[in-house]
Length: 301
Ligand code: ADP
Ligand code: ZN
Image (tube, rainbow, N blue to C red; front, top):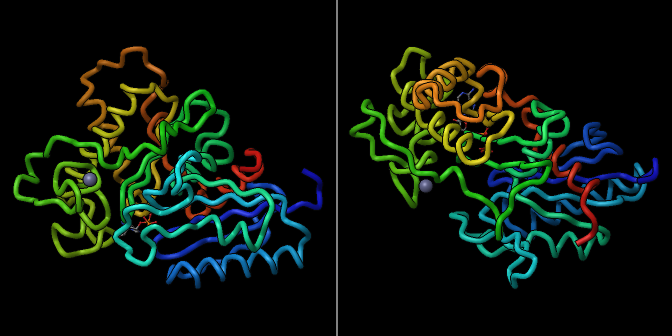
């Protein structure tokens, strides 16, 4: 990468697309937030942003895109780069790479929004210096990404750990859950922002810390953390997303994690739970920083 070359990053979300450019992934020069309307309109505005950035700051070397999903990441697939079964009808089967490729050319890379946030946190945030990390976001949905030995886990496409099934907490016996696919069986159905709101009709940021709902939410997140720990032995589990703004949850999650494991730490990969289950550091920029990191690190597709 020469000094003059710009990197572009896009965090393509269901409500907004955040775009940024920088000459280093962690140093954003300019950033824009574009409403998610129709694919033509939104992707057109994204291209306009990058065109104007390259006029001002010099040519773009590469653009990384972190997309909401499920998105087809299998390069052998005919639907590579398409958003698959989203409830957002206008975006179903939308191809988010081709419009960028046609207008911007150059090198494009694609991953999920969660994997991009994981990469950003791993390189420049709470996971700096670590090679084995899990990143979990608890927001409108629940998503998680894994980095093992420095590589992001993809499998055939990408993991969907937010839909991991968890046992119901006793205080939640009558709660029906909100996952479109699994109702009250999975973490997203029980612990996402909309799931928290569905219990009382009050937004997650307005529910007091003493409310019993937090015990249940912390329990579900702790089970997800425990299963990730048992499967892949990460050095850290980083928790981000809107719901994790409620910082009282961290100790509740650590406590529930320790209780569920019942001292069975096996080949324990952490010194203390405070350093093992940690808050994300990059906040709302994790996705774009990760997308720019991917643009810098991955070769042309
Ligand atoms: P998204 O998942 O849509 O990308 P966020 O990670 O910000 O965006 O998550 C939005 C969800 O997080 C909403 O359901 C909202 O109620 C919840 N949320 C946002 N801020 C807070 C907060 N301070 N406390 C608790 N919940 C919050
Ligand atoms: Zn589910």
